[in-house]
Amino acid sequence: MASYLTSINITRILPYLHAIITLIVITSVLIVRGTKTSPTPVAVDQSQLNEIIDGIPAVQCKGYEYLLMHAARVNETALERAGVVIPYDKLTRSPGNFRGQPITIQGLLWRLYELPTNDTVDFKHLYEAWIVSDEEQFYRVVCSQLPANLQLGDKLRNVHVTGYFFGIEGHESWYDIGIDSIFAPTLLSRRIVVKGEATLPPNIRVNLTLPLPKKEVDVVLPDIKVGLESDKSGKLTRLTLGGNNLGNDDAAFARLNAEILMIIGRPGNPLTKDIGVMIDVDFECDYKFVAKAVASCAGGRDPETNAQIQYIKNIKFWVPRDPKE
Image 1 (spheres, rainbow, N blue to C red):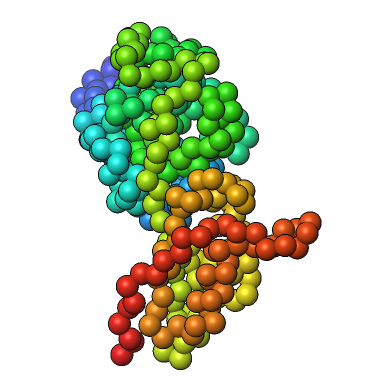
Image 2 (cartoon, rainbow, N blue to C red):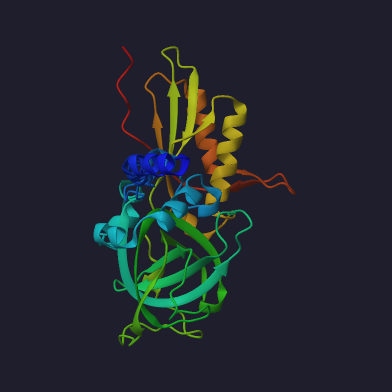
């Protein structure tokens, strides 16, 4: 009698068990779908790039690692679709207008290195590629992956890259090709796409012994932007360099002087003749602060001889702002 009742009870509850199990499975699927990580958008958070300064190495700028990580996470197909071709002259004249925008270049792979990753712990490997574009201009590309058909040391390959435009960087010591230093646009990407072996146009001389044509390094450099903000009484409230707040005390001008030296690389660098400083000053700002800013950009003291040395000669002023009401 007991076994009979047990069999009846099990038979009656089986449909309910089936319904409960089905409900659990459906709920689990919905939860998984609802919590699935959303794809990384192509557009970047521009607020992460506000403190990037053109002319200095990318690793010294806030925003470098953020943009590298974003490039590594974004869907490559989506990034490729969003990439646009920007003329080199337009890109180098107004780098701030294109910062963080997907840019596409194609050209000749000239050099390929592996970069140290001590300061960028989120990557096992980082690679630096130098590409001579179809416009016969240098671009620097930093990527976190290499395709199977590209190896370290490869060169003279036709390549295609879509990456995020970081800014203009200054580089020195290219003695093996007869170049003291160079300023070049930098793109941050996930990988480089190889389009085949290169067939060099007759007007490009690229190898390990011949120097590149001089036009390769004739870059129009953007002005270094320095800002002085003040209150109505003329007291300095903020000294800025490329949007980066340096403070409003004497130490702020020392920071400005140090940053300018970092940008030019070294006093007497021949490229400084092409570098200009644009100073934007509030109408009420006391002239003594303006004079300090000019002096901080113009030069400094030799630490050994204490002699005055020149950093930048070309210093200009933005159109004066209207007085504060």
